[in-house]
Length: 247
Image (cartoon, rainbow, N blue to C red; front, side, top):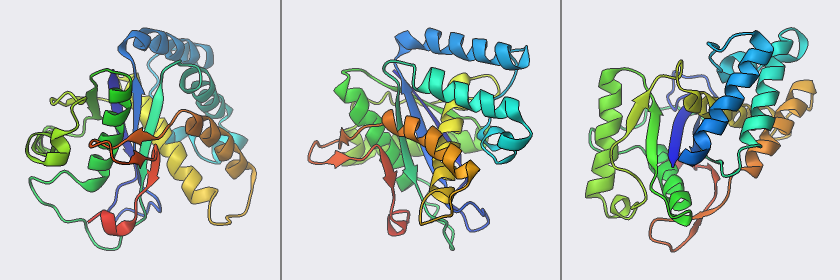
């Protein structure tokens, strides 16, 4: 199984994102080919070419409903035909609140939002009796190395991480420009973030929020509760993390 991980927004005071999201999309390896074929067909149908990068920041916005209709169609077809149409695909996410002070930067500590997401991926992989390879959106060599080292410290040194036995310990880093799995994770993270920002807390309903609810309802169907690494509790597939647990 492969788990593609990407984020929408970032938990930092300088980021104006109200609800940053870290999301993962899990796909059995024997369904990858079918998924990629669907993505290829959608891009060719809408744009007449394949080298189009799907980014939530470009398609999940109000202008897609009034001017950029291809972006609206693109997002809808990917969500309905790929996310809803891939048999054993699963989505997990950690939703955060905007913070006012920077997170502690411990060189050996895997940030809690990454840790909680990894636990959910592990629980799902374990339930399917499969090992899971983690694939992150590549930033740069230095940042990728930091994430890789922190993940290995978590899996090898902490008691909790050692119990994540369904995670392959070596992470991979790929470019979203060439890897559709990361593009799908980016889209899911963007929809979940926008849903939390525009559809909750009694926000006034409008055409954009109604569209977001439609997309989110499909994503929400593809998540599930899983067991924690030690098996003593159930973890929500899409988890709104309390601010105090971020630090």
